[in-house]
Image (tube, rainbow, N blue to C red):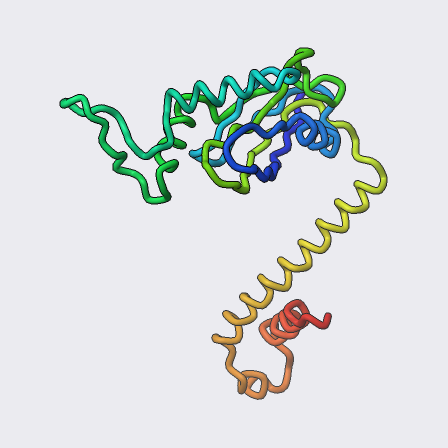
Length: 220
């Protein structure tokens, strides 16, 4: 039995360094998609933030995680120790002292995650939550690719109507755009006096040009 697939994106606004809980947004994404049973694969489309599953009850866990990361990869702009035992600045510091440290923090964590879906919701432990971990020192707009695979329920009547309307509008726009391009090509090769030379009889080219005008005319 073939499985259904859907690729969508999740938009997340962060508030600077720290954790943004994603459970609610991901479950809403699953609800909107109609995925009942299967999995959702997440890919963080950035190199300065990451994903993690961790404690969802005691906020001190996240505070300790942030403190550990600050100690392991300081954001002061000073890089690793050289042969003389002194720390040197990172070579990549185009966007400030937190630039290269953010990339290192991302490399130490993870940017992809696969999660099971049961009854249309994330299958998680009682104390688990999904977080986007922002490693930059300022707020950012982040995007996640969400690849859903499994059994997707039949859309409701309203969803089918919206989908059909969207496909119809897209097809119409493509027809007009492609028609306009084809019209330009044909017009470039068209000989205006050909109609008279053919004895006043509409040829296939004449009829084609008339049809192209109908397609490309935005008033049609």
